[in-house]
Length: 442
Image 1 (cartoon, rainbow, N blue to C red):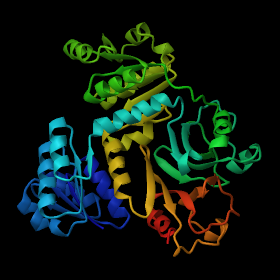
Image 2: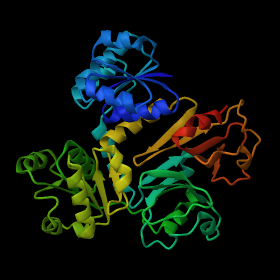
Image 3: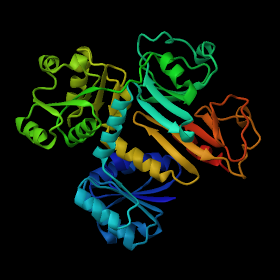
Image 4: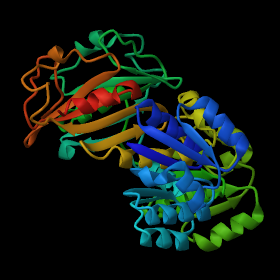
């Protein structure tokens, strides 16, 4: 597939790196010569220096031959104009990053297939985290028969230091399976020899009947948050506070700027707004941070978010979540006093990746702190996997089959589970084997 990406910022560069790694033909267009040069030196793709809003620039870059245009520059106007050019040049599929509500309607009229607002995407993710208790992911597959759960290992958990083979002997019925561990940003597909460490982010595929046992094993509660404190008054903080309040969650927003607090109080009457320093322990204590189910540090400064989240955790907050602008930090800080990390740029990029993957793949799940993907695909008549057991597939260490759906039933498979025509497989894979995973479908 030939993919054009307008904008070599955090979102565009992340997408270009992921897609080019998988063998897609990627062309980036960036107006800033310094940023364009940096992208060309770091990413295996063609980078064109020029105005992504210019039809002539896009023509010279070869946009007529594109299968997909992704306009994700930091300018809404540039992204709208790029999509307008894409429409004129008959590009089959188009994606645009747009925050302005009025411009959203304009790009939708241009036939844009997917309009992404990074802050809205991150706000929805934060709401989901608040509603899922201590679970960092809870994603349904196979019509809800299978659930992919994610959580960070508490330092006091009794299974720390044991291999999965040892722990499997303690599990009755085996209706769930650890499929991957994420440690300091490094993802490893789980094997019997995998050892669980404190603060690991682990991913578990469970049959719906085994979810309760998986929760017990992780020593977690699925009880949704009832009280959330939001630190900061950025657009992301306001959108998240609004979603939380609309969901019936008691929400308090704290920010040091009195004018921004007044604006929030007027716009969001159901949110308690407090003016104060988000890194001041006395302020956090006074606002009841110790009784908060979740504290979300969502200012525009990574350093403030780290300090605010760590202070809240030290004062007794059950769960802390921090926002990061620098996406490379997301996988490094979680588990170190910060239970989860979000990036609005990463949330947008992951939604776009899910859109790009559509085809032989039925659904895709990506993770904020990992380059792994969970994909659901159907075994077609040309698949070499038909009639073979999972053990006979000799999958590489960067891939694991976490679930198999056959008709109305679904199972967490074993090595002797045999693949049949029409099966839906839930495959967890690293980037280097995404192409191989797609080939399983035939």
